[in-house]
Amino acid sequence: MSAGRGVTCVIRKPFTLTFPSGAVASRIRVGDLSELPVALGRIGLEQSRPTLVLVGGANLLPDGDREELRALFTSVLAPTAERLGLYVVDGGTHAGIMSLMGEARAAIKASFPLVGVAAIGTVALPTQAVDPKDAELLALLEPHHTHFVLVPGSSWGDEAMWISQVAGTLADHLPSITVLVNGGEVTWLDARCSIEANRPILVLEGTGRTADAIAAGVRGELTDLRVGNLVASGLVRVVDVVDNESGPKALAEAIEEHLDGRSTKDDGRKMVDDEVELAVAIEEQLSGKGEKDGAENLV
Image 1: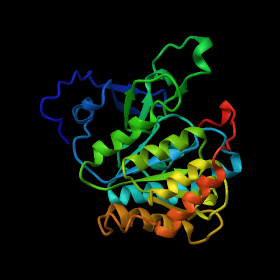
Image 2: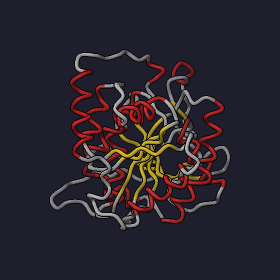
Image 3: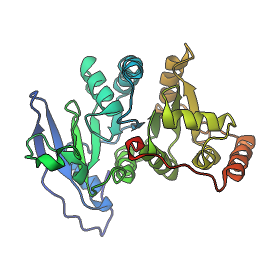
Image 4: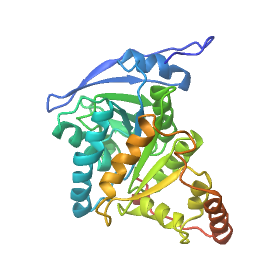
């Protein structure tokens, strides 16, 4: 990775975060996209690697679903990242799928870099004194991540574009892929950012909410106008990891197929022309329809 010629970057000094558990992580704060190559290098992430982007539910994971997902993270996602030597990039907070990835990495004693990207105004650092009135508005950082990139923003979703850009910078010329698990309103934005980056998305059907809405749309069921736009990209693939016994194996194979260089850009596109037509039909039928989701469904 390298910064472009003629780009002037003001890079903040990297720091080490120490969590109450004794775990440590490198962190750096950036203010502009042009700073990313140098900033990532300063926290030891200068080598390009294939990259997995993890997006989806931060909250509203029922206990039963959480335990099912924990097994998936511990037996499939973390081991696959370790075996392939990937970067894994997510939102970095101590909630939902980000906690599951951090805990899975620790459980299998993995060494792959786990990079959290969070908007500075939405999180509390381990040593930060927080005003009690703000405590409920700020999320804790997940303590098993190895690196954190703190980016501008004070609202949930401000980090979405940055997660995608950090992943692209880390991968550089190597492939990257997004795994979408569960999710709320912000996950739709995460998905759009991946599509805009021409990054394939593996949607884990059966994990609930946004993931299941997208999976239903791929099957042609009327769900949400945004599904049509995703399907039309040709970059969405659905893997049933709950009701299909072979789902976890299929997930690992799909990640490996794309990230180990055995597939071409076109092979990574699941959708064909008739599915694009389906997307158009969905969009036409859903045009003008919408629903308001509560703030609790954002993440």
